[in-house]
Length: 70
Image (cartoon, rainbow, N blue to C red; front, side, top):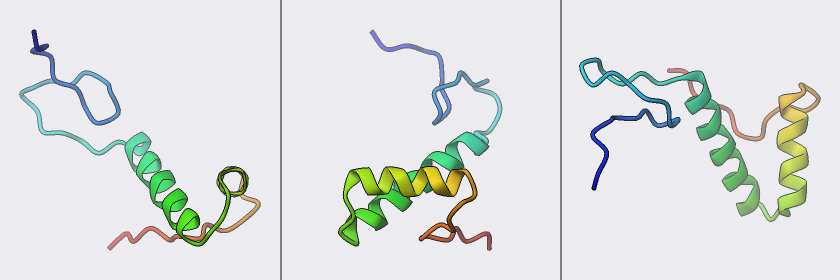
């Protein structure tokens, strides 16, 4: 049996009468996915990708993939 409760993309429950909102959490998750995919395509190992994403989160390195805000 399917649940009648609606959820947002980040797993939280939402009010079915309101439009979906893009949360900061969702934007961050999509960025991590895109950054990881881009670095994997460049030939980096998963360990190196994890280290890079951690360093970007701490502000020690610039991201390899820039998000467009247009």
